[in-house]
Length: 182
Length: 189
Image 1 (spheres, rainbow over the protein chains, first blue to last red):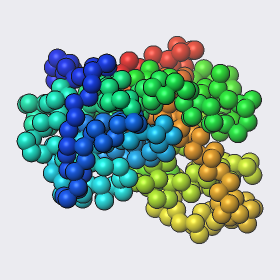
Image 2 (image 1 turned 180 degrees about the horizontal axis):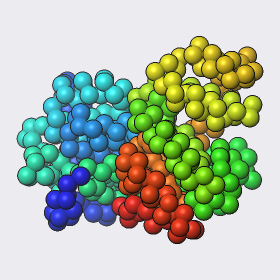
Image 3 (image 1 turned 60 degrees about the vertical axis):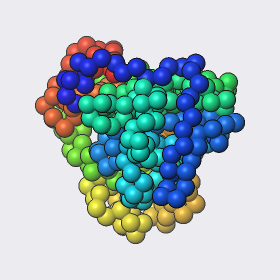
């Protein structure tokens, strides 16, 4: 990653405790998804700069594999970038993604801006994560350096905290309880 | 976010090679079909050779199965070989044949290693080790693994370059000198 990633001021993404701005974006060319329709369960919003770029690919591939863990919390995950629906459709098919990618395409980046996650200089969104509770309140947010895949442990910790129960991954991981982590 | 600490620590459930009291423990989360893991394999071998008794190496599974359709079965095959006491032989065999990981290839490797190939085939068929592989994947996610390969040196995620062989081996040597907790790479990201 370039040094300028570290030099620029931290973006002011919306923090925990703030209601998540509602939006309606195309998930497919003829299907619109409205955030408020997902009330009643946790939602993970994954803003990423662009379809096809290497780090995004790794990041979405990772989340794609972790879907069963996210679903154990009843959580929905939505990917959001400024790419159009046709790019999203091709990207999702190529990477065999099993969660929606939303097109923040027109007006460009409007949703990213509402979350404080738009990069004016690049015309893309930040690599920003938001975890919303079932009431639509942001409970955790994180902005990663643009070239760094933030992984999923922060998301899982936030879901764990929201659900008030320990992570399934921590309690069901081992066949032999004697080997379970402390 | 993760502080990049290995969770759970290395234990008896792991596949371990090298002395238990080695000053450096290198843990790799890897995917048998991932080309980068394939590139890292000989570098790890070289590190093992150069550090000798100073290094203990542990491999945990992190198959990105949607991206790499053969990775999950290959991981189970290594586990099934491990149940016959031959994890590392199968591990090496798979990494040396990343372009041929169909079920019949795997069975062929089991035969050439002198394993009970029929038993290994039954284990794959029954999915005996699916959960074992998934457990590694899950604890990798919780440890801050974000792609493959991800290395941990003495329990701390190594964020430096592994592709630079000299730098990687140098970092392991530094960790050996420093003993208990390594301060390699940047563990603060």
